[in-house]
Image (cartoon, rainbow, N blue to C red; front, side, top):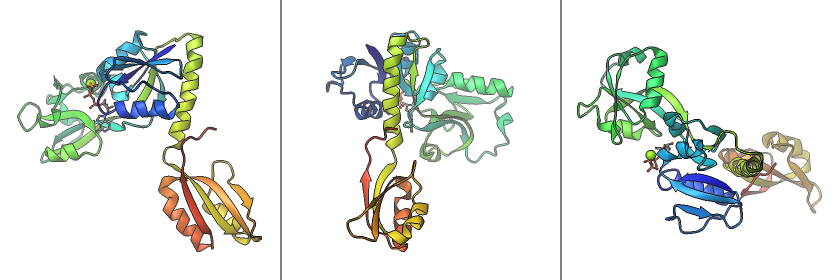
Length: 283
Ligand code: ATP
Ligand code: MG
């Protein structure tokens, strides 16, 4: 039986539970419980604050965890990063009031910086040989410069909207982060077998994200041109239609390319373009 720690509420909770569900792992409905067991996979879920997940996994109370890479780096407990899961994408950056001219990382020499990530920030400035005063605060970091608590901040940025609202400009990106699957170092072989089943299911779910299944009918004399427009993972499926002179092409394409490819296919005489959602992509 594997135990996985997930964030109990907050930004990663819903997507973590959804990833398990899409990987075919059912969970008991009552998410208020601290611990819930899957009825169809040898796994139980422990719901925790995200701050506590790296340590819980590091010491083996949970075998696995899903948490932001930023928390893994900040807590610095020995864990193995097994897989990047592609959601919860953000970056950790330094920002200063936008009216101040930025001259490079030396700008921070002797300055005060407010952050909830003192560990990552300390390591960054140590490597750059810059001394600054780090003021650790738990929340609302972005208001610190305007109330005179700090000269700059080091915080999570995704769209950058919060920085702009607070009159701040992002000046250095220190790290990128997304949700990662972490594991206790040195898990025994029998647990690793279940972990690798889980990881290959996650891979299938992650691969299908942003992909669509396209079916399109093309005149036989335009097949080569159509295939040049739709590169596929291996080669696309080509099927003859009952109507002689026509074939159907089936292919997996990126969602972002659907409209462009459909327009180009129509230009070469393709008809009946059907776009379907993809749930899993098992290779
Ligand atoms: P907890 O109550 O569990 O301690 P928290 O308040 O510390 O939660 P959340 O705000 O729920 O944390 O964020 C969880 C994680 O989601 C962050 O550590 C980060 O990896 C990611 N994250 C945070 N903000 C964003 C954002 N704006 N966009 C994308 N991902 C984000
Ligand atoms: Mg937290």
